[in-house]
Image (cartoon, rainbow, N blue to C red; front, side, top):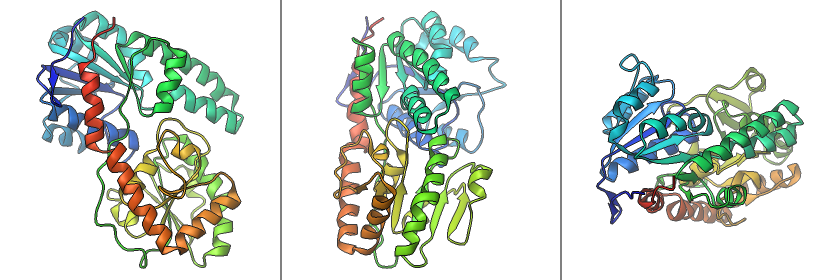
Length: 379
């Protein structure tokens, strides 16, 4: 067994290879934002970081952003395949991070064969099988249930095959320890800056929902909110609108656009919405991991009204860091309360940013990553 040389928060090892499903697009989805920040931290430790999308595609401007940060990016047509690259260059890596179950299943055997000296880290991003099981339960989709069973088999196999597995919350760590006794599991959660100063309460108006629509729980959440909650809110707050921001809204979402329902699609800079809207909503009915939409809102100091599912895995205290509700009537009342009460709004705004600084900052992630990079190989 071997151990990375990491001392006082910085690494003096050689090279780390990170493989994900695609190039991080931090302005488009939460998983990409976390990966982008994770790569930044690894370079700050003094490692030479090489990144590859599983398909070796390297779209701009995202590839250029990584390269500008000092990260080597593997691309086509320079390489015929990642398998070839591992065979040719694997000997130089001391750690390989495989992000998401689809990538881990596809490459872990090749990494073991061609990079035998490396510590293999499986980064779950969230437990996919948990999200799929919950989605099947909420929607009654039997095909999704079948897929969840298949995903669980693959995901737990990857956990058992890796030297270390990363999860984003204590809840998911406890789940994996029950399912895979003896597995080495570490928490590296979402990573955020906070944005200060926070614009004042009085000039703000309207509601905000944010989330990529490549992620099906967001589609379900918007349908639920607009059908069951927003009509109640409009009876209480005259003229209120909701801005629904996110990449790739399907026709079923676009068709819901109205004068008071603004479907923006992808927005390169979302700060203007976080700084002008009064309440962020996160009415998720299923999911897994921790929710970037909640963290991003809190990082801007924008109070969140969320379902229990949306704040899962967070040390989130109701009425302190936001409002947590699980029925349509309660969701409406919570929105009205924080929308109209400046003292409540201000307290939640301040407390939510403090929570991000304590648990979901670069400093918090750095402490956790050091543990991962110190951990010995187990296989």
